[in-house]
Image 1 (tube, rainbow, N blue to C red):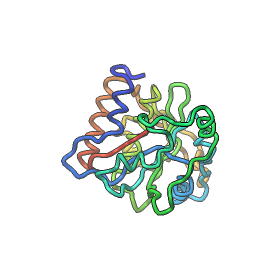
Image 2: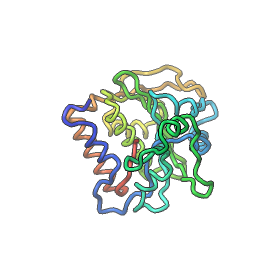
Image 3: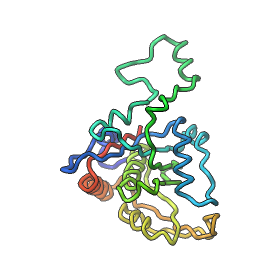
Image 4: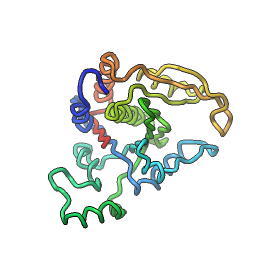
Length: 245
């Protein structure tokens, strides 16, 4: 858990926007849902080479040790928080489920209705995180090519960090191609350091993977880094909504 404060205040901030003189960011993050699988799979196929093993999203979304978040384009950036919650299938806190036990049981086993075709949100990126004991491991992160260099990858990285705070993770880890200097630079900015190499990790060309890990993310030093990075992101790209569920 965090050393200096509980999770609840952090999560209140994670779904709000940081003050920024720039206009609100035109993208927001929310939890991935089953109806998002076709779009997210298309983003994954576009981001990674033919040898990449496709993520079994249907199985992963039922995995309690995994969290998948998607970055969506906001129809109205000023209304991004409402858009992030637009098709949330859980009853709102002030609107408890009605109909007694039978309705509750039906709700558990029934499949949620997807939003109408013309109201589906455009997914431009996604990130997956596995939680193992006290470690949060980023399994995959991708952004559509035409939406890169707009702060979306970093937006997803911030959201992955925030959900890791929520889950009480001690450290975060990931793998990255040894040739991907740009990604390594971003990860180093967030406190990731080289911790080893996985030989021939990538199946398409047998390239090695660099293992990177953070210091303790609950430490006061890392929390200060996080606060600074979140502010810098807002100042450059605009205030953002990162609802991690």
